[in-house]
Image 1 (cartoon, rainbow, N blue to C red):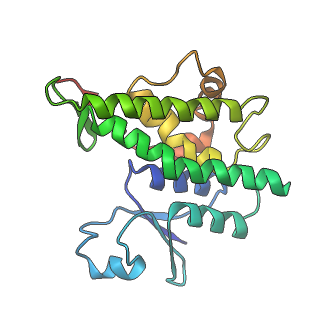
Image 2 (cartoon, rainbow, N blue to C red):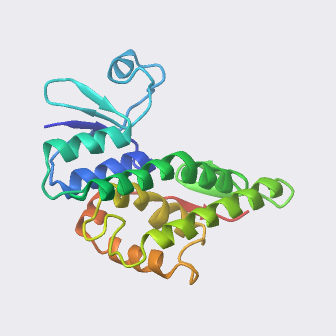
Length: 219
């Protein structure tokens, strides 16, 4: 049985747990303690970051996208990448650009107005808010949401008819952080709203979701 080293509320750990649930793969999960000082964890991932998937033979795979691509290769059913080569590339582009550009925008949007002490987002007082970063990041977040809304036009999932690796990657932000902060649902994004409704009723969503989600504590 493989072992997943991950944190409960990490969006990247959550993303891998969804893929594992979709593939019906049984695994053990370990929340790493003192991963930055633990030499045993460094042997699993020299970058000392989670998630890390440790195979039964002791070999390890890290980086959430790489882990999920590996799971797709060794457990091709149910498929989480379309058959058509262009559509496969489109799904990968959605996932990659989300990790590279959307998450940083969401992180700035969050940090500008909250202090985070897991699992609570403590809202900053007005004099502590970085208003410039807040507005800049708000614009960036909504630019990305507009693009994602277009990607869902005429599609059930970001993968078309299949729940894809891109869908798994977007779940934590679109159903978690952005909903907690009141950005979603938004009538400007009806396709995303409908997608959230479909995602959150999936059994695999409930299996993979954090046991103790983030919540806001007002200043």
